Length: 62
Image 1 (spheres, rainbow, N blue to C red):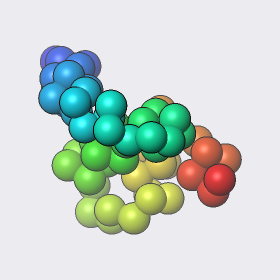
Image 2 (image 1 turned 90 degrees about the vertical axis):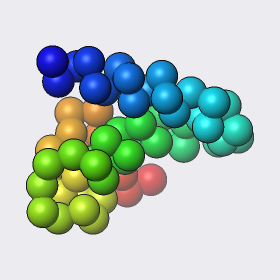
Image 3 (image 1 turned 45 degrees about the horizontal axis):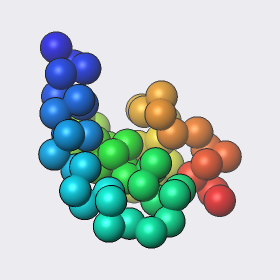
Image 4 (image 1 turned 135 degrees about the vertical axis):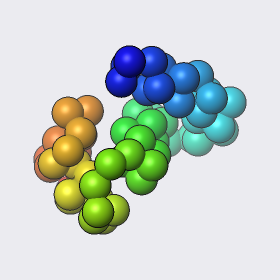
């Protein structure tokens, strides 16, 4: 069930991701948006990265 909403989100974001010129931004955007709308009280990037397997602290600090 959890994977369904993530797949739906990625499908919904597809036209927007195509407009992002930067490859890293295109890759990170779905995880960032999922972090914003997902569970958890803190919505800053480090707590979201800690909750999301798709993000690593190394990628966040680039």
